[in-house]
Image (tube, rainbow over all chains, first blue to last red; front, side, top):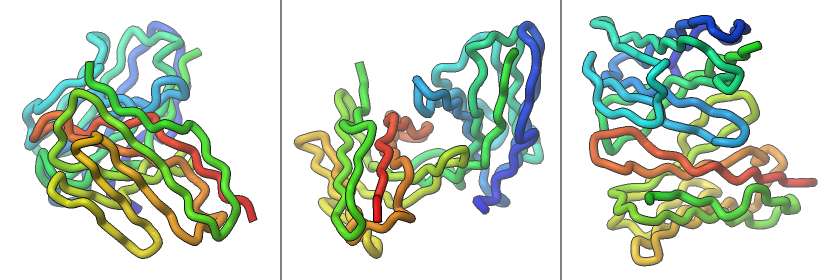
Length: 113
Length: 112
């Protein structure tokens, strides 16, 4: 158990809909990361927050957004969903923003039908 | 463009042998490199970190080397066991203070 909690574990939704994925980082970790993993693309970095502020942006679509709240939990919002958004979405956390190991949650499986 | 390549998508070896996985990168100058293990449907789990000024790092049956001139890291599992079967990912910090970027991984299968 990494200490990173993600909900929901599984989610099935229709195209065009919007979903919110939630992440609670490990106790004491200030940095939260979101990654998307699909079979053909591997693990793709989406976005990073550090103590409530956006720190880095990766391959995140404009239809996706995220935020980190004062209690350090984070949410990833996916809107206007397309079939290709079906993937495993991971949240990870670390103590600081660089030079450290990151700890992954177990992921949220999103299926868009 | 920047790229991380793990040369083999799959590697099959017999129990007791040494598995060697390769990670190559281009157009990066990472301060450190990390290796993670991922089991199907699970989140990646950290194994080892090696810094740019370290040539080699060991942990139990695991060994990692880092050659910044060749832009390559090798990951070795000695005396491999079926329980070592998993996907192994290498990861780099592209820019200090930001997230890790991962290779696509090599899936190792150890047969008894």
